[in-house]
Length: 129
Image (cartoon, rainbow, N blue to C red; front, side, top):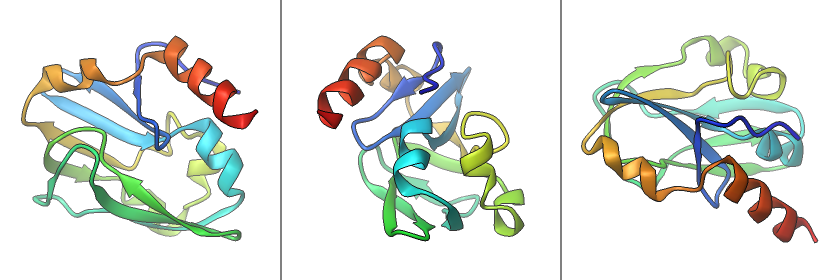
């Protein structure tokens, strides 16, 4: 399982990469494996407010529809438009081309309260067993 260092992770299997006052958000490799083939992504639109820990959209796979929760609080600056036609990018490249939204962060330090790669790896290992 791929868990890149340098990102922050939630217990609901989202990740955020903070660069300055912007956070890029997606779902983890673990999440996409659990979901199976992703067929649709409902994401917030630019200008929408998102709140850490609150639902901001859904990810639909052949197995289920899952909540997409925001790891951070802020305003959506950009949505990955490619996912409308290619939701499978979440399966193929969850940390790259499969990013979901970019958020203008209300408080860039907020992400420091999320799990780092090592803590997330331990969390996943414990939740699987």
